[in-house]
Image 1 (cartoon, rainbow, N blue to C red):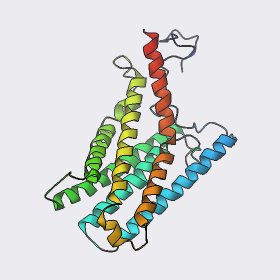
Image 2 (cartoon, one colour):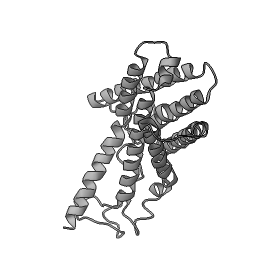
Image 3 (cartoon, rainbow, N blue to C red):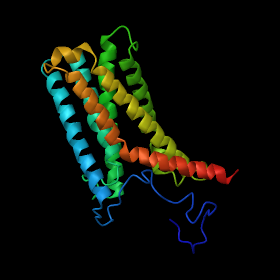
Image 4 (tube, rainbow, N blue to C red):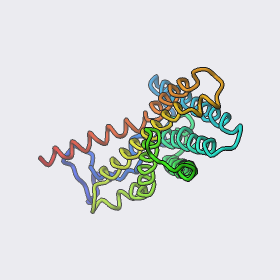
Length: 257
């Protein structure tokens, strides 16, 4: 944020803060590592929710991988890779940016950003491989909701990952496009792609594989409920940031009308 005494670039049309304030791509959803702990009731609630979510992510991932690893098959490889990619890595990549996340709140925003793209990139690679092995094993493709949502999510996440670099240098690109627009589009596409991917994961629980491999009654419904819960809890920070970015963007539009 520029000092008000500086003669540098500044816009004051919407209050005291500049629309081009120099902040990173994770604005609004990362806790600064320099802040002192403030254990308010709200932070305790959010930290508890995040802890529960971490536990659910690990348990669901281990449960599915355990049953899929019992024997080798193309379907089992697909299940293992996509479950780790979506449920574990994509969820954690989203959650690592949430404020008050007890596992990463003490880290600097720079470290959190790196953890985010590392988790996302590894998750994307696993999902790509998982989808590829299933694609090669079948002669007919993309007829079910599971496969359609899966490939749609994969395309979106690929775009978000490949074009994630402009978010890092949004401030430097301010002469061509407003930083808030770059950040909003990145956040929107990433959130949308993650939701569609988890929807695909949920539809996968209705496949015959679940009934064949898992002996527990109503295992599909249990996994469905837990995965929906993981999705909601993981998006807490991202949706809050998306809402704030949308409001700021609307205010900016209104300022020119």
